[in-house]
Image 1 (cartoon, rainbow, N blue to C red):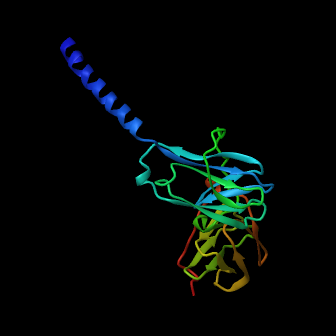
Image 2: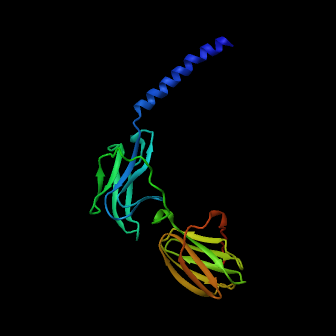
Image 3: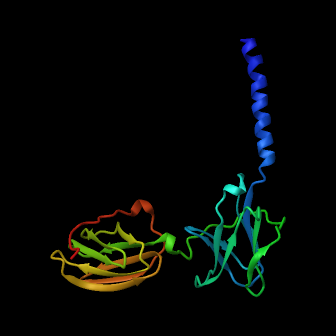
Length: 233
């Protein structure tokens, strides 16, 4: 047994040495942001979004890895108040290992030098959803009837059955603008609304009327989906 331990120790030391050499040869890469303007901002990368308050800074991410294997990222810089797109900053980690997105006092966006004072990470947020988020409509049915919701968009038509007196059903999609129709059990249209935008919405059914408005994200545990082949005509 002592021979086995003595033989295995050099192997472990050699493996550890190789790992240390690999780590030393791997500079890693990451991105951070500095906001010198008076405008609170949101930085968006697909479904990932971070808050960047006025006169603040923070790390977006850091990671070990080979920069040559990393995809370039097009970060969208948006006004946090109205989600208006101010600029898109492309980051190529092969060229810039430590990318720092700098928003100047007049809200101009560019890549700047790394800021060693940045120590904390930016907070994530659900604000300013975009096309990668799609949209989700959370349904509350205040009637005692089984009804249908038909969503028509450029790329798809979806129908969902809505149970009586329910509040745990959702429909969603990937079209920015859709027409949402409330149907009775015979597939007759009772009400219709055009919904535009990304993110979360609430739909309330009362009588034969459907009202739709923006919503905060509902708990995933509260959602169910009841898509059906009925009423597609």
